[in-house]
Length: 317
Image 1 (cartoon, one colour):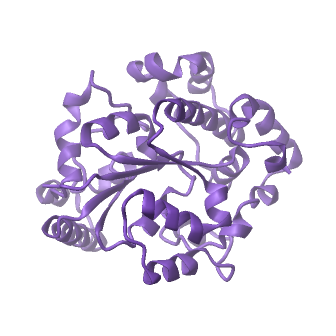
Image 2 (tube, helix red, strand yellow; image 1 turned 90 degrees about the horizontal axis):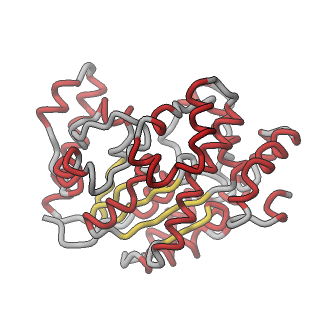
């Protein structure tokens, strides 16, 4: 049984949650849990979390928690579902991954590790997760142009019907965007347009979280990228994690100027999701190389009412 407060690292996807989660997991006291809410991950890794999510960005609240509570509790307690994982294994590679996950969960459980759930797909359920499992929450914020440009590079579209079909989510949080979401669910829009609306939706909720939860940690990706060592050291302190010289060295290795930008020149590089080594400072304004001036203006015009809470005029230059 877990005796330390679990940690949730969330925010919009493409906001640096993997980088932050992995850097916090450098602490030997932390047990890393990767995206249990992610439909793709869940389908391939039900051993990690056997909860049945029907939608991207599933919204859990007191009204529907009975469907999910036990499975998510088991995940946070490092209870690996070996039988469920065996049912979906289809390759030698999958078997190797299963054994590694099983070993890690067993080790975390035996050492009473502190669970760290890294999952941007859980952003709409962050409030419920924090309340039910007494979690310390880290929410990442990223510049809208950087977020949209990242989706553009990857050509990631989004099924807006997954939001529309969640009546509790629409009722509680997304009602200001209902007509737009309906339009995007019914008719295909460009990646730029989809990413812009998705950024607005997620960060509209983040503003509500900021107003309501003073004890949550809200961090701009750009601030973290500019001063990674200082920012991570502060983050370690606020999360009650020990910060060592070894951790400092590794953070430098993962964010130094000798690392590449977050660019993808080939399909192989595009699929290399495990690499999180970046020249963090140079990556801050990488969106300027990915987007045309008209695309930047289009994004800014659509998000300004929300983005001005996080970003000033100088952040668009």
